[in-house]
Length: 512
Image 1: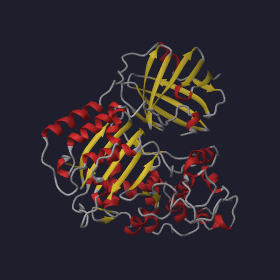
Image 2: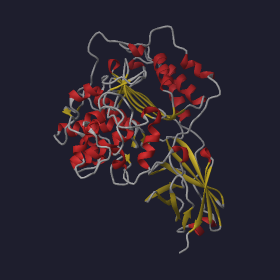
Image 3: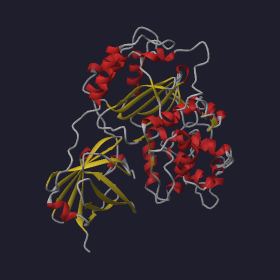
Image 4: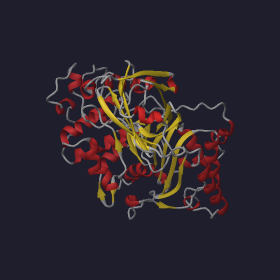
């Protein structure tokens, strides 16, 4: 469960890396003299792969077979790595072939990655599927889906909000919009009932008129899905989207009332995230079946509202001149280049996508024809892929300090804090994993923490831990960026330190 990232405790967040200077990044940032290959416009219809579907796995091709230079890709990846750009993965797929699959330590490809607001593109897609099934109507008033709720500030404008307005970020409700969306989201999450809080907001504009990026509005779509289908958004997605596409490894959080987080926190493997892009590239068809209505795909990825920014908005998707994309904070992307029959997926802790565009522009030599085979380039690319995936791995525990046994099972009550963490309890029963039970905001969460050097999935991302000394236990938390949590045990006292925000929680063993 996420709280305000300004005051996070034990919660995933963004690891911000500030570069001292451009250095080798100038390699990306200085455009070449030729026009960008990403703006290529074919004379005919872009190729599709209607006889091939990556349900059980993607095909693989050398970069050269798809018009890319492998040596240039290798140089670009090495530059990202040497400049410590906080990227976790980069996946490039062209004509249905994976030409680059790269993972940057400490991210491990075997774990789903938090896609942040890329989730919004999935939520709006699920809304379209439900509408096609007759479960809901896009142009029906939002309030009609909540007949048992008493909704505050219910004026004519709010009564006119439709499901389509929510999907297009034009609902008109009071919000911080794109610059203040996190504050608006935190205000919703500070309430006991998040859906009610999202519904009760005052109106700022007539619906359908003004773009305002609004996460609570997208969360209402999750509630509408659940009210109309009888399934949570996650359950509906598994049945109607993930299973047909062969997506199995999914993690997606829910709010206190059990509604899946419509606006964010969907975790997928990068190669599974690419399947969402491929589905849209194929106009909503998968293995000959129309999964998403073709009319919705066309509407969702075209400009429906001006945003006042470089890119405009469709329904859950951002739209630019040569691409459309699902976007999440700090560098999560599913980017589709229709004219190039290409999909790019990035996951990251802090990434400016302009760096990836520059890499693509330099490495993409011929949009129409294969390049000659390049053995030296492929050898260099393989070497770089190995290099960026290696790091100082955590060592498996060979023993536990006496403290581990002494604290196991004890409940620590924490002083009042802005993160609303109430209690903590640890269980150390072996050398493979530990368990931490976290009481926060009236809810209980179980964290499984790897002690063998391997990450485990928790409600906030991936975690592993080690004893730094007999009194100090360190948890590494990998979600969007890598964070640490330090637990210092001293008799019946526990101090929990969160270095990136310079915050320490004071906790005490709870009397029986």
